[in-house]
Picture (tube, rainbow, N blue to C red):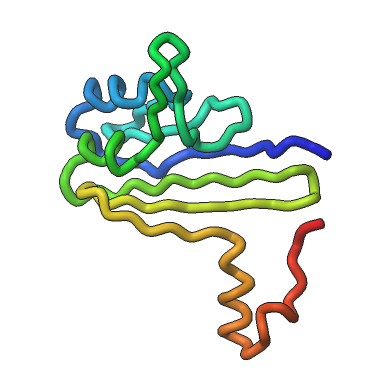
Length: 135
């Protein structure tokens, strides 16, 4: 069995407090990039995906990676942050996920696996009759 390997990055957004954002994301393996007055994020985690938690061995503290709390407060009003993540475990399965966050913390999520229900609805076919693209 192989390991899941992925890539994760964000769209370009305007940040109102870059120092606050850097401090907020410091425990996580996230790089903040700047181009043309806008910023984008990418991951340096072992598997390449967005982190879920950070565990600090020194004080037994666990920090959840919640973009609504960790990133959105530092965005300019009206900005929308999109976090994309794609990956695979060889050809056993492919994954993809996108999360969008408004600067006020509201969010919406879609995943590649949603295609099965979307196809069933669009073509009037029971979802259990659509074979999955995984081993």
